[in-house]
Structure formats: C-alpha cells, structure tokens
Image 1 (tube, rainbow, N blue to C red):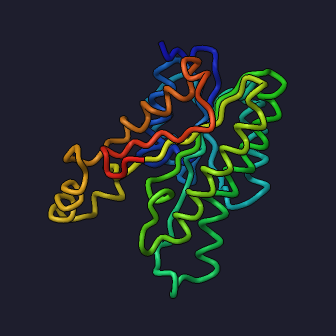
Image 2 (image 1 turned 45 degrees about the vertical axis):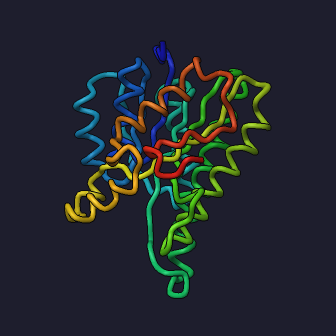
Length: 245
C-alpha cells in the first residue's frame, strides 16, 4: 500500500519542516524526489540524508521564468514528473489597514500564482502519460481566515478554488488534484513561541496538542498514491479538530 516505486516527485519548499517531511515520506515510499527550495545548503543536507534517487535545485518561485525552468529541469533530470507537491510559501503578516501592496503581491505570487504556474507546466507531461498527482499545501486559515493574514488567507483559499477547477479539467485523464490544509504544526517557525503561547494554542485544539510535519506528510502520501485514485478536488484538513470542516 502507498507504493511510489517508479514514480518521480517534485517537492517545493523542501528546505522547510513540512516540505522536508513530505520529501522524506515520498522517498521512503520509493519515489525519486527532486528537492526544491531557496536554501540550497538545507536542501543538500536533506539530500545527503536520503541517499540515492534524490536531486536538488534552488530558485525563487516568485519569478515566472523560474517556475517554467523548474518543471523543465524536473522532467529532464528524472525522465518524467508524476507527482507535484506545491508546498513552497511565505508570509508577510500585517493588519490589513497597514498591509503594503508589495507584501500583498509577494505572498500572492509565491503562495498562489507559483502553484498555478507549476501545475500548468506539470500537467503537460501528466496529460500525455495519463497519470498524475498534484497536491498543494494550503492552510487552515484559507478556510477560517486569521487576523493579520489577509494576503496569506487569500492565497490559500485561492489555491483550494484553483485546485478544484484543475481537478475538474483533468479528471478524465487519470490525474487528480487535491489539497492538504494543515492546522498548527510544530516547525522551526513555531519554536520561537513561548511555552505559555504553545500551551494556549494546544488548549484550542480538541486533540490537545499541535501536529507534526510527519502527520501532514502522511496525508500527502495518501493523496499522491494510487490508492487515492478516486479522490480529487478535495481538501484534507489535518488540524487535530481545531476547525472541523
């Protein structure tokens, strides 16, 4: 079950906690994996830990040309691209009344538009081969909203809508398009919070704790596998019950 042997996957944002866990999980299931991110040193370290069937490329997905080049590189390096994981993202948090246009646009460019460009590029090969998996990492805030994150929430909600449209367009060609929406997940970004802050957050989660990157990765593995061939246009919420959607 969940055997990805012979499949080739591209994971963006693989230098982060969730992206790294996804890459490890897909690789552990037998996939050849291309790691993408902006911090090449972190990508190289991850690649070394995984061993064979791993490739590394670094670029800024805010650039349209970089998105096109990334898909081309993945296809040429691995021979084909079966699985695209749109995980790369960033935040520029600020209350809406103070949010600068450039900070709005940067988040939209990387968190939404890059995912579309990569999906569009990846679909060309997937359509020819009549098999493919696209999984985009969104967020609980794309469904619930969050003060100070109008740009991020808009990008993540947009990714869900985009994925549903793509799913409807390519379903008859053996390609599924889905989303995974994490809640509060323990990563390097959350390590800066005080224990009091972490405890307060945990109290708002019915399961009583924050999630782990591996738990998010497990959901991605399912959606990337052949076992999920009848699941498309869906959003899998992994949030411990923080928002029961």
